[in-house]
Amino acid sequence: MSTAPAVVADGLTKRYGARTVVDDVSFRIEPGETFALLGPNGAGKSTTVEMLEGFRTPTSGAASVLGVDPRHADRAWRSRIGVVLQSTGHADALTVREILTHFARVFPAARDVDETIAAVGLAEHTKRRVAKLSGGQQRRVDVALGIIGRPEVLFLDEPTTGFDPQARRAFWQLIRDVAADGTTILLTTHYLDEAEQLADRAGIIAGGRLLAIDRTDRIGGAEARTPIVRWSDASGHHEVRTHEPASVVRQLRSEPTDLEIVRPSLEDVYLSLIGDASDDQPEEAAA
Amino acid sequence: MTAITPLARAVAPVRPGLRPGHTLRCAADRVRIELLQYFRRSDALVFTFLFPVLLFAIFASAFGSLPAMLELDGQRVTQAQYYLPAMLAAGVFLSGVQNLGIEIAVERNDGTLQRLAATPLPVLSYFLGKLGQLLVTSLAQAALLLAVAVGVFGIELPTEPERWLALAWVFFGALVCFAVLGVAVAQIPRTVSSASAVVIPLALILQFISGIYLAFPMLPEWLQTIANLFPLAWVGHGMRFALLPEIAHHLEVGEAWNLQGVATALGIWAVVGTVVAALTFRWIKRG
Image 1 (cartoon, rainbow over the protein chains, first blue to last red):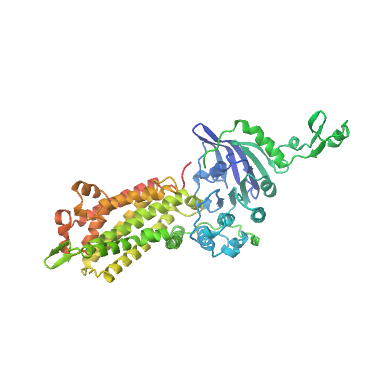
Image 2 (tube, chains in turn cyan, brown; image 1 turned 180 degrees about the horizontal axis):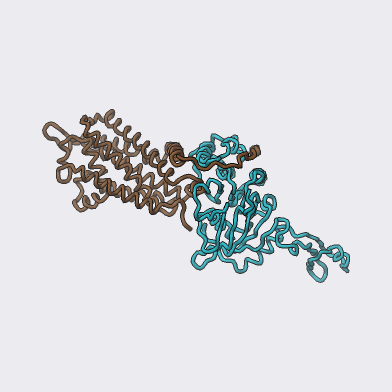
């Protein structure tokens, strides 16, 4: 097993005319790692992923997936990559098994069709036409098509948008199984809990720029995780960041009307980063 | 929520490459998939597959009581007889240019092609799948049309082998020609919803000026000249040679058959269509 990164984005930039949609984004994903690109809608997540999938050409910067520049993707490379696009046409007239059987024949080392259908929880719908499935079930067909070829690198672009909470939990387990197989996964999402649940590391992207990148429990740096003490009293609302919240509370001279001590979660860190960036962010191109 | 079966661990770290014959094996499976979808889509079935048969039945019934178009030396060309070759030509034209054109335009704009592009499916296999679909459906359509003409309307088919030979080469020439033109036309519509709106009027105009719905000699000379720049009028001419009694050449422009013209027009358009299709075809829309 080589130790070269599975995915490298090196200064990836995409401009449409004067608009910069992705601005100098760099990251590496190690083999077997699950990496999340986290950001609000229109942050440039999909454009970044599409450059790595070979569907868009970067204006500048370089990409490498399994050691290959995606612009020069050939069929051998495609057979090692799995792609779940944000929106896909559905072969509505085909049944779940028919479309998966077809895709399995296109890949050289495909997974077993029925096993894959069972893995995405569609075993009872094998013979149903895709058009007759619910939106969430159709999304699971997309995921099944993405993993049927036993990919070494799997791109998942907002895979759970529109899922109910139960379906999302089931989906997470599926992705953990795929990851446990040794598959390298790049996931885009605007759900923080999804990134926290699935990813080893995450990059936060907004306005086309990568604002932070780290392990999901450390992102934003140690400073961003410093506990916050908030309280109100006669003189108004107060907020103090401190590593010794107990002593701050002990030193209060009057009874606060409300009091909380919080250790900022990924969500707090994320919101503060996104908030800082939202002042001057360009708009995302229509995908 | 259906139960999710954990994925079996991947046991094959050694990945087989793409085997020789990949393109043809994929093409064979594409034909299977295309046919499954075709015969399950009611719109394609009614407006492409059955349309020429229905139209022929209407024409033959409506004009059945009119006097023959031509009677000479004991031979006659009836109205119904005259429409049969036109409807055969229309069948291949609709299946090729109109149906393939709309189908591919929709698949390109709804993300179906992008999903295929993310797999090791060769472009050639995709096209061979479309060609296979066209071949099977057009042959079935022609057989049905001839069966209705003979069985219901008592039309006599030619007995000379040279007429059937002509029918065969005009039919297959038209098939290849209209297939590549369908691929080329599919590049024009920019959205799913505009696919039919763009393709159908173009197809309809060409059918009207090419002697499909109106007898070709009825058209003014300048319109005939324009129509003869396109392949459809020539296909109609070739089909009339194959299926009408010899005296029918009196109904043609110049009162003579011009098979060389048919072959030349089909040859040129097949080459032009192939070049345009090859140069303009894209798996995905560039953003």
